[in-house]
Image 1 (cartoon, rainbow over the protein chains, first blue to last red):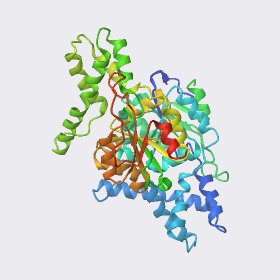
Image 2 (cartoon, each protein chain N blue to C red; image 1 turned 90 degrees about the vertical axis):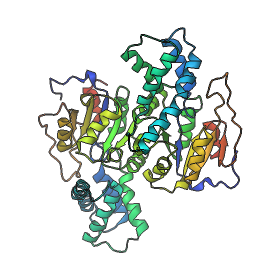
Image 3 (cartoon, chains in turn brown, red; image 1 turned 30 degrees about the vertical axis):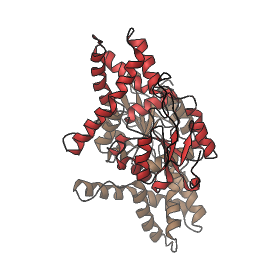
Length: 242
Length: 242
C-alpha cells in the first residue's frame, strides 16, 4: 500500500529498524530461555526482558542529557535488565559466564523468514543499512549469524545518540551524503517512523503481527503518514519495484 | 610466512586497511582520469592525488589536536586535494558537478584480484571488517561496487579519530568486545601495522608490489615484528588455515 503522493525515484538508502522489524526477538529469546532455564516461563521471560528496554534506555538518555553519563552499549543495558528479570523470575545461581552467554542470545536472533531474501532484493537498487539502538558488535554478530546482507551496519553507537534522537535519522543521510528525503526508514514501530518523518525521511511500516509472540498478536493496521505499508520485506521490495 | 611465536587460536577479528591493501587505488584513479581528462598523464595524476593525502590528513589532525577543527570526511579532503592537482596539471574548466563525479572515483576503486574471494574465506571463521581513514559512505559505496563482503564497515569516522591514532585500533577491539590481541590488522603499509602493534594487535603484512603502478614497484620485503607476511589475501587465508 503506497501513499499516492510518494515518489520513490529519488530514494537512495533504506535504513531498517532491526529488533522486531528484521529479526524475531521474541521467538529467539524465548527459545534460548527455554533451553537454558528449564522450568521458567520462557515467553513471559522474553517479554519481561524486552519490557525493561524502554525504561533503561530512557534512564540513559536522561543521564546523557543531564551531562551525568555517557553513551552505553545495548549489550550492557541488556545485561543489567537481565539481572533484574532473573531475580523477578526467581532464577538463582547463574554465574557470570552463564549470564553473559544468555545475554548474547540477542546476537543470535533469527531473521523473519522474508528478511534475508527481501534485503537482497532491495540492495540491488538501494544502499541497505541497519539503524538500530543495538551496538555495532551485537548487530554485526547478528548479521553473520542470520545472514543479513547489510551494505553497512549503522547503529546509535556511530552517532553517539539513540533513536528517536534526530541525530540518528539525519546521521544516516549525512553518512551517505544524500538529502533526508532520499532515505527511507523501514520499521515495525509507528513511533520510530514518526520521529524519522519529522526529520524529513520517507517511511515504510512493516507489519509484524507476531512481534510479541503468536499468542499476543499486535495491531498492524495502517496509520496515516507513512509513505508505504508492507506486510513484510518482500512486499516492500514489490512496492518499490525491486 | 608466520612468526613462530604467533598463536592464531584466540584470534576473532581481522581488520583490513583498504586503500592499497584491498583495492587498487592507483589503477582505479588512473583509469578514470584517463577516461575523463584526455591528454593528462593519468598515472602521474593518480600519484599526485594520493600524495596530497598524507599532508592533508596531518593538517586536519594538527587542527583537531589544537582544538581548532573537527573531524573531516576523506571525501572532503580528496576534493580539496583534487582542486590543487587539477591546477598543477593545468586542467581548467571542470565544473563543480564534474569535479564531484571525478572525486567519486575513490568510491569505484577495483578490488585486487584476490580480495573478494580471500575475504570470503576469512569471514567463514573470523569477523572481517575494514579499518580505513575513508569515510563510511565512501567505504560502503566501494564495497557495493567491488563486492567486498565486509561483516562490518568500520572507519575513522566511527571513532572520530584517524589512523594511526590508538583510538582506531583499540576501537575495533572495543566494538567487538575482545582483547586487542584478538584483533589482527592486515595492511600493505608497515607504519600502519607498527602503530597497531603498539596497541597490542596482531599484524599481517600484505604484499602489494604494484600499489603505485606497475612502473613503480614497491619494496615488499618482510620486516621484523609482523606476525604474518602474505603475498595476498588468499595467502593470508592459507596461513590462517581458512
